[in-house]
Each structure stands twice: as structure tokens, then as C-alpha cells.
Image (tube, rainbow, N blue to C red; front, side):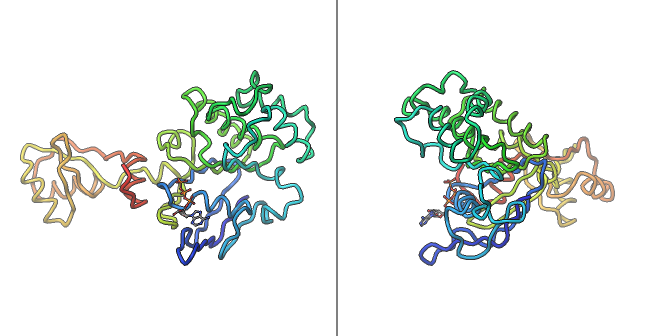
Length: 292
Ligand SMILES: Nc1ncnc2c1ncn2[C@@H]1O[C@H](COP(=O)(O)OP(=O)(O)OP(=O)(O)O)[C@@H](O)[C@H]1O
């Protein structure tokens, strides 16, 4: 549904997005993850035609986004929730958008309700909180009921209730066959919302795959009555090890491999578990980020 091929952006000789490619399928929520300055917004801006790529391109349902006669009907976009006129009410902002998109203005109340702004449509945007502006941006993206949603940090500024509402909304969209791409720093949220991760670090894709697969562990935690003997056996077998904070050994190998090595070396094992890597660890390991 959304196909990105070799997208590259060079600013003043500096490559900030470097040969980025990925494909998004209908029925999925994909999280676009990366530390500050990794190139997420620039990639989204290139997909939506706001920033011309230096090289490469992207297509939504077979056409570049800007080549669709009425692009809001193919993809709803939320890039900067603060880029709205503060003197207008949320309702009038959306009514103007509806007219431009060729959508009946009756849709405005529907999308306001969908994002939990049912009572705030008559209020000036200048009086909206950041979370309310995010909801308004989301309402704008949903207006023409497009199959694709591309959202830059959509839960930025939302309270836990708002986060849950957006999560349900995006999951619902995917369940109805929609395609969602969202960028986020809130890793715990992504964990619960996305099926798949595309991770970017220094402008390059560093991971791309189903979230469960990326998080599945290739490491294990092991303990025994003679930890020194256990450590020695693993090291002799070429397995990298490190102490874990709870006194066990964290071995760079799956539990099956570790237990085979211990058995062959005649070293007793009292416990062995797969180490469940969390999204935070994966993020910092793969993105090369030192921001903690
Ligand atoms: N118009 C521009 N001119 C020059 N450099 C730019 C421009 N826009 C972005 N950059 C640079 O490109 C790099 C990637 O920025 P981008 O905003 O895409 O990152 P990001 O992953 O979205 O970060 P954040 O999470 O902080 O929004 C940054 O180093 C940024 O300074």
C-alpha cells in the first residue's frame, strides 16, 4: 500500500536520510522509531511531498502522494499539530478542511467525536492544550476516511486516557484494513500499538520487522551452584557473557545452546531462562543512540 524506495535527503552536503526503503501492508500499524534527529520527520515529509527527496521516491497505492488528485482521500497526515491558526475554532478549522477535501461538513462532528473533542469544537484553537491540538490534527487526518494514516508523534502531549483512545483508534483503523505509519519516542506505547517496527538511526534503517520477532531473545540468563565453572565453560565455547544485576550470567546465546554447553562441560545448571529483550534495549542497541 505504501512503498518507499531509496529515499535520500542531503542538506548542505550532509546526508540526513540515507537510502531508506520499506513497504507497508494494509491491516498493519507500523511504528517508525528513532532518536531525535534520526531522520523520521524528514522521511515523512518526503513521502508526503513537502520536502523534495535528493534521491529515491515513494508511492501510495501505486502513485506518489502528491500525484493523487485529492491526496487527503488516500492518506491522512499529521505532521505538526501546532501548525494551525490559533484564532479559529477547532470546528471551523475542520469545516474549511472538509470543503477543501470535498467531504460533507457533517463529517466534522463525527471526527471531533472520534478523537474525543466532541465538546471542544466551538473553542478557539489558541485555547487548546497540546494534547487537544494533537487530537485535532488526528481528526483532520481522519476527515476523508483515507485508507492510509501517516502520523508524526501522534501521542505527543496526550494524557494516558488520550493515549489509550489513540491506540484504540489506530488499531481499529488497521483492523478494518487500513495502513498506519506512526513515529514515536514513547516506546512502551509503540509496544502495545504496533505490529511492526521500522527503526532509523543516523538516517539509515537499522531494523525492520514484526515487533515480536525483533524482541524475541537470542540471549539467556543462567545460574548454577558454581558460577565460575559455568562462566568458564561458556567462555571456552566462545559465548560472550556478562554478569546480570541479579547475580546470574547473561549469555549471548539462546537457552538451548547454553544448556547444551553446560551439559557437555559437566557443569550443573540450576536455572535458565530466555532473556526478554524490551523495546528500550532494542532501540538503544540498534539505533546507536546514547540518549538515555
Ligand atoms: N530543512 C533542513 N535543513 C537542514 N537540516 C535539516 C533540515 N530539516 C532537518 N534537518 C536535519 O536533518 C536531521 C534529521 O531531522 P529530522 O527532523 O528528520 O529527525 P527526526 O528523527 O524527526 O527527529 P525528532 O525526533 O527530533 O523530530 C537533523 O539533523 C536535522 O537537523
